[in-house]
Image 1 (cartoon, rainbow, N blue to C red):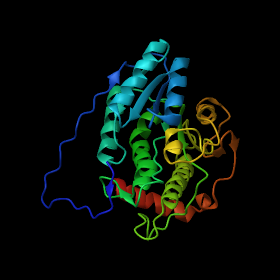
Image 2 (cartoon, rainbow, N blue to C red):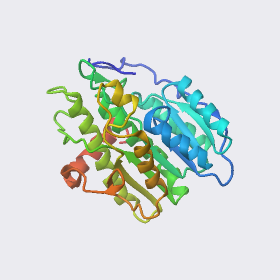
Image 3 (cartoon, one colour):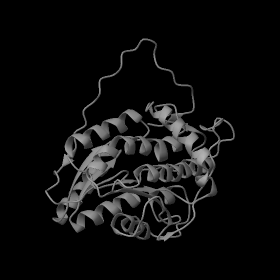
Length: 298
């Protein structure tokens, strides 16, 4: 849930809410199936990746905000009669819903072969800065912080399932984080907010790759394509320059290619140098410390 920018404070002395239980709809995975979780998989790029993986015979854990769209995609996959899927609703504008999603996946799946952090927003036509239910700038949380938390929560299962892969769907857009103005209370622009969130994804990729070295779990980030013909692009009245099928194939390559490597950034299919700030170890360390605090990891 996104709200207009305003201070958010918890009620003094309020008792913590009980942890909700999230039940998925759809089939369980079968022995021998590759299990892939794709966030933001009910629309655009995530939907195309999910449909293709299921058509190959994989089990896809579907995620999105809309139960209606999730059920439609689930029915389409079931009609294919090849792979299988289960859908879980969660709004990445709520860190509690991210935790609930992670709890459900860990409860229902003894193995997880791949995680695709694809969920994202681009509020280019919104009139001003938007906040999440947690009080964070919307792009920073939905595009980066929620995926950061989800990955941290699911990492033990990915390690247990090695070899496993993490793919972070990022962008060539960039804006170096200003830790004195991280939520962009000053000088807000949607493009700056979007670029900051996407660069943060790449920074997280590089840090996590170092941690995962030798574990059998790899993580890479990519710019899937420029202005694909998705609803996000069209809804912002931007002329598409590429197809969602190109972006889909770029993501699938990082899931399938044994030579994809670890800790790399790809411009569609080609490994390339990420924005310069992504290689600044001091900025990355500060970002990780701030992120841990914001998600309650420390």
